Image (cartoon, rainbow, N blue to C red; front, side, top):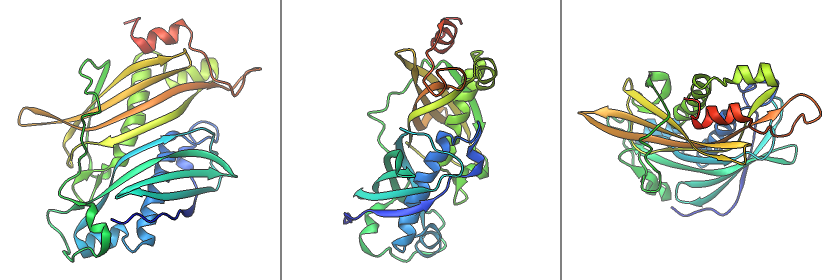
Length: 289
């Protein structure tokens, strides 16, 4: 695929669904904006998801995304998404609101050859280089955490899937948000408790989600979470891994990382990062277990 050097800009707005605490938008919807911008790039280049599926028998799938979130995004902000091709199927994405960069990162896409295609016309041009038989990325640089601190399981219902079959990238984004929430609640420092008792709100400054293998509709996805590091008592780095079991073998289907902290909403230090006290440190590291 020949990489086009020019940048393409799209105007987007975050979904109102994402303003869960006051009118700030959560990390999940930053990732949705990046996804929509890249999908729009494909539409504008004559390869929207509908045409790819019905005409060419291909499924457009995100397989890897990573974002840094240096600034706050509000629910009514108009976002300009700048998409820059970097390599075959790899894009740089920069999100701006009012001239301020609120997100920047990279997104990777593949075109999956469907098992029961509605159409099979050859894909013209250099996009044919993106065609693969199945979703999956190498996992050599992604640690497989076996001594997980927290685990739960969920069924891959149809609304987590694409094209009547595969669990889509955004399902793992949602799973990451829920996994962190469940982990914190199990440790006694739920989002609701810290918000009510201390006025602390969750802040995510860095997040990545990578799909490693196909998971299919109605498979059970076993999900683990581990705090891998606590950074200067103002943030913690967490790792999520997802698995399915097939024939007695555990297959890792996705992995994610998140750098999470809290901002204060009360007093003279409102808007600044909160410093973890001994209770929060013990909860995050498992010292009180």
